[in-house]
Image (tube, rainbow, N blue to C red; front, side, top):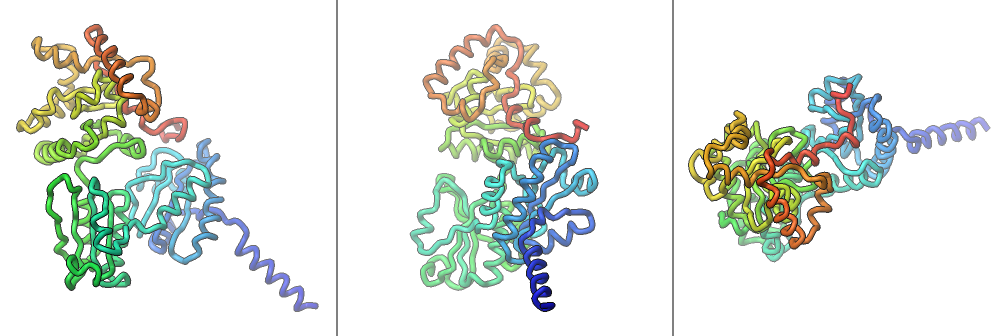
Length: 431
């Protein structure tokens, strides 16, 4: 009888350990480093107890932690943690957290650049975790697979003799670290890829086909993870990034003025020209301005706001989160110093002064093209506005343009509406 009770107690203890919800791991300065170093992936919720949004999310997040621990039981794979940003302010400061709740992802102890900004429900969070677990590497089984890669994208491509080799493992690690910045593909069948891989493992960068650039091979040691990461990072992260509705909040959250090239979707030549001139003229300014390019057809709303249509592309614009200013003529971007002068004039306030005090009738004509005060429907959702037909867009643009001469202020910022919403976050400055 005594043994029966002992077995029952042991059973219930084991049941409690295995099945009772434990929630997310409370992370402090004492255990932060050990948790990051002992897991491949760590998702951390930075919360504040005074924040109403944190209070709403915390029980959902704890439920996520329980589901993830049951679904992914392999030790060291993933941890779901949380930081009380009031009690552990040094951790929040270290990772530049100024709004709550903020979800940051770490891989191999390295903070990834993109926060989780999706739905704050269990399904959205769980779907995000599933995608983080999946390998970002496109498997190449035959040479045909290599030919069928998307020609509009750039890739890091590797050919390896053995999927279990240390070289491939480092390639996989770097691919995971940069999965949000680049596309990766790899083969591990030496017989099928003899023309690509005669003997040693090789990796190269292949730019989108219309760029006419040759493949650039990695000449360092593949088993040197730091060297390979540095090379890959340099190839993957452009001076000019694309802004989309998916990453707009992330990019605007940085608070830097936006220098945006609006272009046709297949106009890679203008993008390359813009990148070249950023490298030549603005290398010392890239920490003070966010250089971006955007598909003009997706961002019809800011074009209409400026009295422009897709027929006016390519179009270069600065959005200061207060006003928008147009670079007078994109064809002049290659003239030495023109782009730098435009940015410096913004910095000094000259571009705004010139708007109100034109120096000549010619300049007045150029500036007039920038003039349009914000109309009542500026608050419309960007994604909804992008679906408006071109005919309606053109008609509306003509209507807007007819109002230009009667306005005296530069167009107000449109992209400010894509910054983090106060209906979604609590900000530290609210304290």
